[in-house]
Image (cartoon, rainbow, N blue to C red; front, side):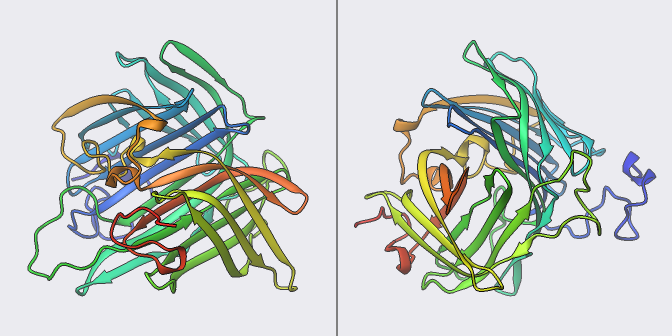
Length: 374
């Protein structure tokens, strides 16, 4: 079927855009956003995903304020035109790779926003993430990441928060490909042990940004790693893509230390060391402020998990005090900890995302969800 996107020269196959290159039900296309006041007064998260082989579009917006994580969710039938709106939640792109708008219309749940993300860096392409199990690609996707600022307003529980670009930083990404979403098809393959160890740390400093992305196996060997120094834009109209951008500096020799809170899979302290080509070593120290549970934007949420089926349209809401989360519930394991960070004389802010299922010997984790024993 022909849709409006076919009017643009963007085809990757001989088929109309509405037809994905495969019928894999795990095919997806997603927006992700986070943002945070530099002093920790609030934290926001947002997401929207399209799952064309499931006929689903879903989205969520979440904000932590006064120790409570408030979240609104929407899921419904995906329109053929790939509209980036579901229920009260909409993503629009005034200028690709430079400006994104995220809105939640006023609604019965009292959580709404009108926010604009503006790029602080060029967009970077992370290394492709692929896992093949039983000769099946169960994960195979590309992700771009970009640092920026937010401005606008958030209304929550009768209170309006002014979001100012000079003090509100964040990261947004776009990813697309194949990743496990929704109910998985049964197979005759033997079950495999669950093990994931993932760290992701996009950080803001005054004069630059830094990045870490890393997967490790149970024994600490890495199957994906990337560390970068990402230059900030030199002017509002500086290029954010293409041959004219200032390329990030790729770093090597990645070392880290991570201490879990006792009984949890959540950081108590962390540090990171990376090496430059000239032999200089930078050390980044992380000082945690508080933790955002990614279930607030659908990741492993027991009702609103990405790609799950909710009919033509369902909208819902939850509000959970940070102290009331069960840290070992599966829906609470995928987290982003807001941190003050220091690198030599530089001070900055950012998140350390942590996802640790199964054992991980280097940091002392055992079992599937066992908390750190100390």
